Image 1 (tube, each protein chain N blue to C red):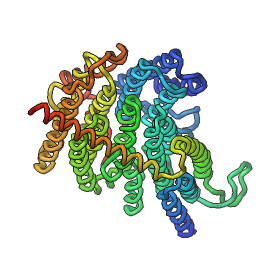
Image 2 (image 1 turned 90 degrees about the horizontal axis):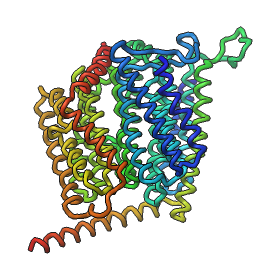
Image 3 (image 1 turned 180 degrees about the horizontal axis):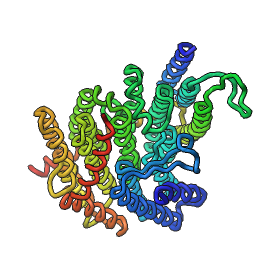
Image 4 (image 1 turned 180 degrees about the vertical axis):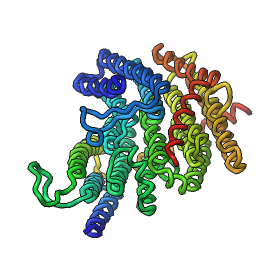
Length: 132
Length: 456
């Protein structure tokens, strides 16, 4: 059973990581969501005992670990809040760059660095000229 | 005990209210400053209590021990909380004096203070995660502050990378619970001794990755320069001086207290990664031409020293790591805040911060470097590394000084006086800690002894 869960978590995490590396911002968000599911599943599996639902009055049979379920619930809520935050951020970025892809951002970064280098070179030439 | 509860509740409650108020009003800014000051005073009182009476442990909500979430104030946690709130206070005063530009800023800073204080003062692993998320969620929004395209793009990178780190942390927490059956840090430390070494090592690597991402160590640093150069000075100061403390604290707490055997096992790996960080940060910082970028790469180099000190371990190594983290956070905060400022004190403050980064007396950085030298005294190779790293940092900080202050780029109308007052206060603190380092030394040694005692 543990092996199956471990495999599922591994596949989820791998899928999420793959999505995270893509250029489209919505896919990046989906990657984060899938990875958060991998984490939640890990928490549920980390329970020390498995059995019936741990609700009072407790049944005679073994019950599953309530603590890991409480943790999983908290993790789901936090994961949802963070996803909403990330989506809002993506929306702002898309509006600012008018493109849902990371390429625009990367291009601008390269341009900015090139501009900085050019400025530094110019400043150095000025200094050399002044020294002469 | 009241001080412990108050230090978390004050910023939490006020932060939630402040978020509803338009933060651009001067009153909201003043309320945030007052809240942070109150938190700082409470933490100062708590530090004095903990130093004289030992750690305070409280189980929340009067639950039986073992059921309720435990809060714990020990020297290490309170020191980091105090440092982080101090940094946040300085950055907030600086930004409020300049005029807050976006609605949520004061509320977010106060909530960030609540998250940081909470995670430094908890003794429960899952509670640590919740406060961790609170602090990070506030910082994700803070990273967009200013709203320029560059800041937005940088915030996206920051958020995605840190979310990935957080989930790695969460998975490791689940693993720790599975192998030890508890979430209390003290019990985990006791029970890790009988855990299968393979499982323990995997969990230790998970925590190491999660905290290294926060700290911006060499192989996990890729997000850092973009974010620190894209953000406004106050936000860069908050992220590098406040939020990055989580990484150092996490490595110390989780490494030295929860997983001491794994820390010992991975000591050489930590020292190697730390050394690479020092050299990489130093060399790249020299190659940059703007103050923001130099400081960003310098941040990567400076945390390398902390990692080297943790790798050496023992009371001396941990004390050096703690002291260096404190000094480094103060340096970074002051240097990031000087960006875009003009006035009589700006050049002086920058020069003092530069001396502190390079480890030149009488600045506090000298004491940090001295402790580092003490920790690596019997290893010539590491001595050479610390010396080389200091030489590199000396070159890059004074290169910035030369570029920015000698070339008349900082002439013009002086910045508002409260901004200059913040700089003077931080400079006085750095100078004071350099001239009279006893209090800082005593506190960091007390914290380190506590950690080293925990390790069998």
